[in-house]
Length: 168
Image (cartoon, rainbow, N blue to C red; front, top):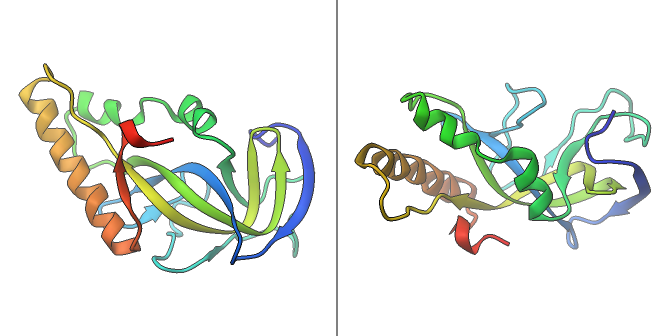
């Protein structure tokens, strides 16, 4: 069953006029973005529109194939809340880090109640964590480490990186 709710419509969206989606990725030690819940060995390639691997030749409403993204940040946030704080709490900086962002959704697209499944996706923005006063020194150190990884990934993919307080 698809986590995006009921399928509402199937359409084709051109690469020159994509839909805006919200999603998260794993940022691995090699600096590349990888899917959260799909094949973790296939990375999103920088500066390219990535194509989904489908079980059949086409995207179907009654299957679960395709790139998933949410149609607003509230849905993305509620589903993926608090992933990175677990890394800090375990005092281990060698994880696949969760990073939120926006993406361009195109190709064959199935619109669901709270998001999209698509055959094509390109990361378009990443989000860094913002420090708050009163956080411990070790947590500040983690934030600096994490944000440097996100900034480097943004440069690799040639996309903007913004602070989470500015993410809408």
